[in-house]
Length: 394
Ligand code: SAH
Ligand code: SF4
Image (cartoon, rainbow, N blue to C red; front, side, top):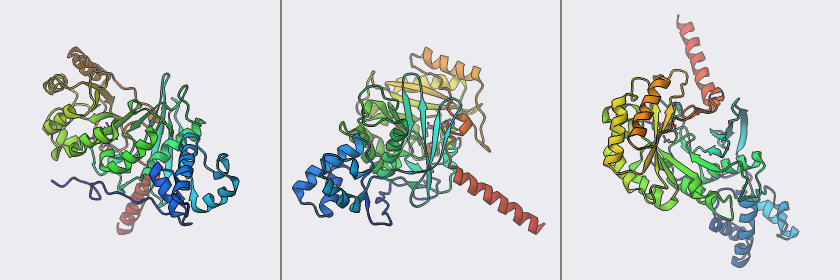
């Protein structure tokens, strides 16, 4: 079956965007890649290895953005490095703060494509919600991101860049083991991370490196709508926590609201969850379940959810997400009583099923609301043009 979308939704590796000035951006490069770039710029193998290690530490552990800050590298070498390399950050188009403290950034890539990231502070943690694509090809019916016309994979540099920028704005350099504000990362921004596997893996490896950003894999969660063939690789090659956007327990409903279900059905998906490496009672899979009024929120569906989790012997918990509305969305939010009843049934089945409090709704930063304002402008522009055309005809 053809998955609805605007481009072929196969993971297409993207070469880092070349800068007009010919310099190479080091952000997003692994230790080996930095070393190779230093050699390409003219250093011999031994010097490239030593400098590469030092530069890695300054870039990812200390947050340096200028070579002049690198005090253990001879001053005489700084101009050479600055001639060949930069330590970049995504361009910030807009930064907003919600009344609940949630922050959202609109970022712009060099090719003028926009994407967003969100920081959610809590009493005991701070979670950065990172995007993996501009838009998303999967068109889940309740998700605003899925309605974006333009889609492209972000590069590893653009993915790591989000974390670097968040650290900048929280003033969290160098990487500290204790007392951090940014403690957790969720790949739950714009896009389907498993359709951009290589870049997401490379970026998260950098984020997890102990001499770099040093975030533990236990504090990173990758959320997928169910790209079954990539799930085992995600477990083996990245090893972070897995969240699966389940949202329905019957073929009929899931086919409608999460169209990738027509390609990879529920049974296959649940089996892939059962096979996900490293899952046990202490490290459970999270099932996300968005509560849509009269669509997927009945007591019967809650009981079916418990049955399925038991049938596949899954170590799992369920996050119940109240639907976050957006203009023109085809669904309503379930009533609080309905959500509570659903949650109670799942809890009674012995499975944890907390109800998530929406965050940052007032700045359109909540789950599923991410859609760049430039895209919104484009739509508004289109509407205006359509109206003008109509007026001219009428
Ligand atoms: N593409 C990935 C990750 C990004 S979406 C995925 O689908 O898993 C992060 C979570 O927000 C997913 O569970 C998604 O289904 C959910 N979501 C999308 N739109 C939403 C909305 N309008 N209200 C509440 N949750 C939504
Ligand atoms: Fe894409 Fe996830 Fe939104 Fe579905 S819910 S359209 S997979 S971002």
